[in-house]
Image (cartoon, rainbow, N blue to C red; front, side, top):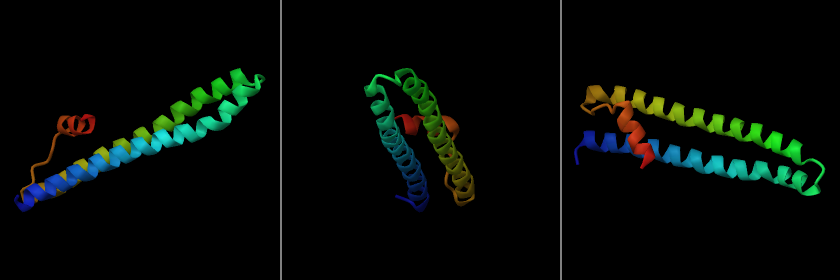
Length: 102
């Protein structure tokens, strides 16, 4: 494996690791955030309020982690651009999207 291949492989590994970690943290965040809402629902008095808050909360949490993944994608693009003068081929956006979906 050449130095250029190692650099490209490292860039890919970092991107995938950050994406997987962000997704895992997002799932934990949503699970923990749901606990007080589940308690509210269980009382029988605040079901609609809990459902409304849950909906907003779900969208908000998802939006934050979508931004993390977007920043990650942009940083990888920047890193690829910086590595290009050293002979490492920059990846295009479709290659970046494909690597995250697998």
